[in-house]
Length: 222
Image (tube, rainbow, N blue to C red):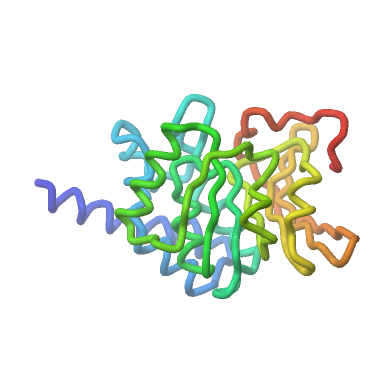
């Protein structure tokens, strides 16, 4: 019976990539291969595993949500992650996005504030063989300055503001990939650092849930 469940999830992974990801014009082969092979279901509670490959967000902890496969793939693709890149994953949750990114980058540093999520993500990443990804406890707003600077900072979920600390931790030419909520619309945005300047471009509309604690406040850049 267990073997049948594995076979079913394998089919669902292929269907997810074919019907949700590839149809969104994501053609990066390393990214498609990662999403076809990584067991997305093991990065969520057992009670939610039946939803692992659905075209929807999945709540993985109170107030914390795993992004839709399509939107996650599109945002990772837009970040243009290279195999030599050092990536910071903000609010990494149970670690699925970090696992996917680990197949593209040299090293992934994940910052998470919830002890239970850190434990779950570390175990899932280890079981998936993602030895180049590490989860550390910290304040996602502050990033992880001691591990940077970073080629890419990837934010898993939506925010209404982007802390200056994130931009300060980007290398020259580094990219911040994030979904910004503007009113009732989420805009997937790539910020690029060039010296002391920050450029930005909107790449697509998206609807991930707001990460708790990232409502707009005075003193932030955007």
